[in-house]
Length: 276
Length: 276
Image (cartoon, rainbow over all chains, first blue to last red; front, side):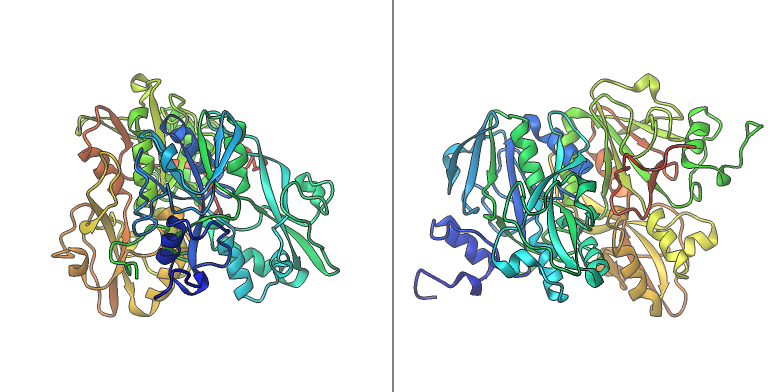
């Protein structure tokens, strides 16, 4: 490649991370490195890491853990080649005591010897599989964010972590709901099958046209609203726990791993194809 | 029930645990509470729990975590009703500094405020699914233990935990290997799909008739040896880490949960059917 501005849609995950690391890509990651796992990121002090992993284990649908770093080590070798979590996410949010204090594109200055990185699966994985199967995904068609709602579904608590599950809604043609359920259930690392199907009242949603986060989308005649666990859940839970320090990716600005999104496990095999 | 010796094959998981808790059943659990999740158990001091959970996350095929207790709390509410891990496993092994020092049927006297219980899935789950699909499972036909081998497959290390994977071998008729692979892959909480298929030399096995643990079984004409990750792996890894204290179940003497073995997640739902 002879210029410094490669088309990110044409290059490998490793090359995209290099662009991000160099500060040349600070935007969202939707549609980049098709077929590669994209991850929600939570970085927190080790003192809270055991409780957070227990919380994730007890709430695997909103919080599917796909990678955990060593304490103080910014590298994530199980997810990809030379991933440095301090530089390889396009945009980060920095929280202190539960308050958003900064949004940055590099956290080298904030890194500490007691920080632990937890990577969580994201809905891109099953959405891609739905699209491949010919199932329409409305918010992608419309070019907007998925509508997200605070549900009435209790999370199983652990230490300071708990609360209610955040869920997404996708309207699915009624004759494709069973297929959408089966396809998404094949991806437990990406929220798995739906949490609920149909009446929004059963999951505590008063008005489908007024999401708590993201954008509203129309539910057309012949479509049924289908609800999945959402990766905003752990972000909210971390915020409510008011940790002295917590760093997450900014919504939509994910870590792109070298692991295939449909791999049986999210652990890079030693003999996998290396970076280009 | 009017007598004190129920047929354990006819009663619920909760009733079996009550028999175990009362000391009336101290034998293995194979075939009991069909359809319920059975678990490998590791109990270790909190100081090692974060590293052990990282180890399990990085080695999900031998170490599929299905439940984690609160520090110092012997109850496991996500796995079942009133499970007390101090009494509800038929037989335990107690290790100090990597040495087996005792085998007991109750660990109330050993319980400490800093102990953490980790429950891991077991191969009973996918074996039951193979049998239901008409795929023969040789060691079950023969009434012996599955043959287990120390493989040449490196585990991804975490803290003091690492080493080589222990694997099981089941001979499968060649025309059913693809089906066996697909069925077991549906149970990531129970070792998932095979680690390897065919030539034992590729996984470091010199002689299939001489397993390192368990019993040898014949590979007949037309059958192919198929290898799965084994729950003895975490036991070996814990032993080699020489923790000051570590308690496991005795082989075959599992914790029986109230969660269905084919549930999408291993987390008991609040509205699930209660104990009888």
